[in-house]
Length: 161
Figure 1 (cartoon, rainbow, N blue to C red):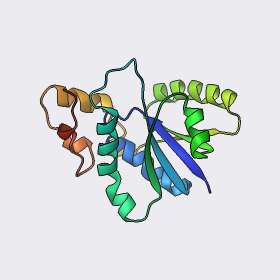
Figure 2: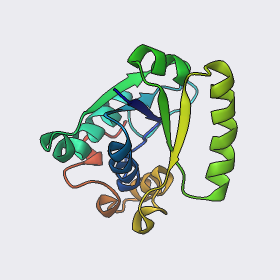
Figure 3: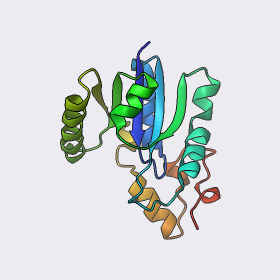
Figure 4: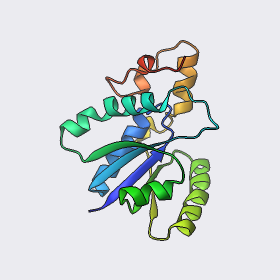
């Protein structure tokens, strides 16, 4: 079984992230969306809120039989891969700057764990500009981020206070 881990902070999970998941499902038997925890960052959403929004965002995919799991993890991504029996890391890239940064991380991960490969995937053209940063800025300034998130994913239920 080809298992891939799609790690990220997902603060919050956007339609761009979902596009990457959709592309991943074409390549892998199982996709694990893994919310990484970084104690040095104060996010807009708690880990629990991020997990809930992801579950809301992918409910339609799961209902259609897609093999997707949502987890949280701490520590190294390669260790999360080992624990999940994933041999692939999925990284979404939007720009050449994203690719350059992600390429360096992929090289370090390969050195740490040679049996795990990183696969770079793009969001669809219409969603390639969407980022969690944009959505956070919209939310923090009182705007409506719904067009950048999956239907049914209500970020306002999960905001940190």
